[in-house]
Image (cartoon, rainbow, N blue to C red; front, side, top):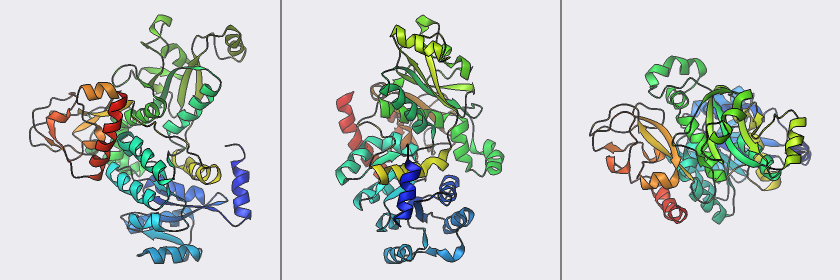
Length: 433
């Protein structure tokens, strides 16, 4: 990203700013609106949300005066507004990819089914898709990438979250020819696998979050999802199902995440994991090299005696960094992070409480299940239920708390776009198992 500020300044000077839209005016979407108003050469020209007032308030918080915000009910009204230098709000997300000036659309919904619909709309109208919806990516990311490439547009995860922050370290290390031992993040909430929206409601209200979103962090589901995104982009897998997740600190990372034969916890190299303790909000990469001269170099640079060394990024700015991905697409025509053409891991559903026949599985962050993580081949062999397909499934048999939920234990919801895209993806993913 060297010189990106200069390239954006040039777009501003030429009167040709990068123009994009956001679907979802929750905390993240509003953060993006506020950040872009402080940047040059880039404009958020449209913001969509089912709650129209939230979209209007998003622009207001960003500092856009009300008289410059237009509620567009039709494609024509939206295009006219943008041409007149106005900002569009809409409660119909399908209108957003139809705005001619929009180059990219950011999915900030967090809902896999909504993400699937937004993605196909974008591809049909020649718009790039910036996916903040990691829940959607770990479910149907490879097929969305294929569909995007077929349409001649870019599908990418967004800068700012732990997965893309980790990819920066990963690309750096791979370019230098370093061996990857482990990639991980610090978990930034106390871990409570049984957390419910009711238990987290007060804290969620204090932080301006949806309670289910907070539960997704607290019960560990978000960690599994984010590390799956990293695994699916790199080909890595967890060392053990659900990862190790040791309690440690930054100075100890390269001592803990090393092979057992070297005194660590790992059975093999090239794994994804996470750490509980004083590591968040950072991400880390544990690397090694077998070249004696390079080991001497690392000692001289205070990286420790080896054989494992820590690369650490102590921050990620979440939605504040997302406009960088939008800019990179328009300026340089490339993504910041993508899944490979098939999954290497699967985010599974694990019963959060005892479930009975007739129970309905909730969405991620609910009361019925939390996320686990395993290699895709293992999950297929065990017929594990992908967590992205769990919402709305009817339980057919007794499932004890802590049990991995399989497809055979539930009646699936087969009528969704998400389900059909996942079925398409599974066909070509099977070839790589």
